[in-house]
Length: 227
Image (cartoon, rainbow, N blue to C red; front, side):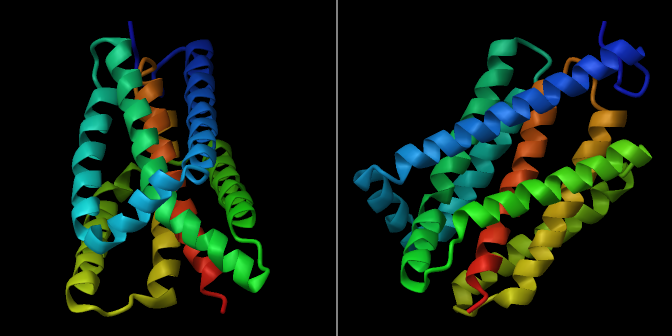
């Protein structure tokens, strides 16, 4: 029988949290491995850069496929379907990151400033700090759900408007998105403690991974905006 994490016995709750973060670590490791393969495969890099010409379509497809992956991961049915959802989401994120990471590599080569590794370390450090805060205080940030949804819709609207009308969003938008990603980490981490069932470790790992990926995306852009 699966309980909500808040109502589960201490031992079962601890095992759920452990499984969640082990799956998250596995997802991050798979993402890093896929990026190493993708960025060293010229055909994939060329395809990724070609996506920039129709980035609005790519974002729509990403949101659609990402929604499907999340539904599969949250499925109360077969474990295979849940893992398929997580795997699909990780592969999709890895592919979406190809043009950004390639541009970051070019930027680093031209300026001599390291980008990807420091951005990755910063992302993990912020994630660890926010996770530690929630775990220590045990606060419930589920009240953020409505606010996060509205802010996210507004951000998506701005992104599409910038592509349609050709204006830049600037560093202030990038910083705002870093803050938004941090808030998602607080929200999902508190859900791990209070609201997910103890058999939903795959779905919890996917949610946390999506927040980490969002944070990494904008941390990279923030590093490149220094000049």
